Length: 304
Image 1: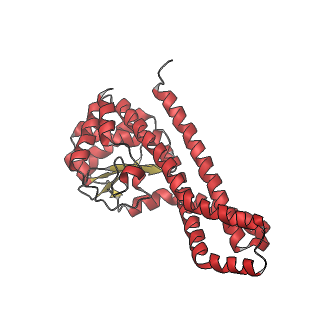
Image 2: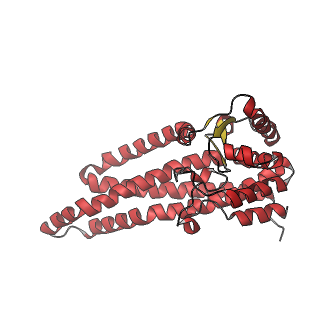
Image 3: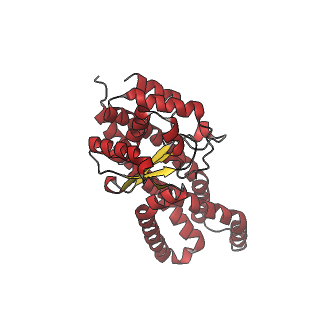
């Protein structure tokens, strides 16, 4: 059997991304149905389509303006002036090699070595690099990090990750509301059902199914999302090495990240998957890690 090529892996990654989007969308639809069922069962035929319309509008707005929100939340500033000429030149040169428009370049004032890419498509992309990366990395290492981020742009990871982050956020919000209802309002509803004779078996089944979905949905979606995000990081590493023709540059940068970073950037967890290395270290990193182990990434790069 022939070994899968880099382009085969890209296609598989895109197929998995579409599958994840479908799964998250179906889970979200189930939560919306249950949300409408418990809060307005008598007007379900009107509430359900209205809820879906509002979710589509929210998703579209978040997708359009999400990148600006990400940049703002990290307190990144435009990389302007003579101080950042080299960084801008690197980003422009590598974007030409990647076949994508030059991104807007930002700098985050933080001593940690890190970077991320965001945007709704390659034509509207941005990359941000920490001052720690600019000060702690040499020329080839910085080029490797920027090439990694531009690979995310070329592979349209930024587009997908923005969309999924919005859907995952909605799943979490709806699940939280439903669980709070089950805790505070559900007991009263069950009491009224008992007074009326217990309610139908269908109603009980819907309530139980909705509560199970509300509990498990955020966990299941997060685990699937993180699994695919890890694969995306491997693909971006390989793409970055392809752009620079020097895998050791990125491998050495990841090694410095492994040895020096403390994981104290205080970045919102919803944005963490965008970074080249997890900016936050928590007790649940082994289970919900958004990135593959740095040791494995370094090993793969040095085997190229």
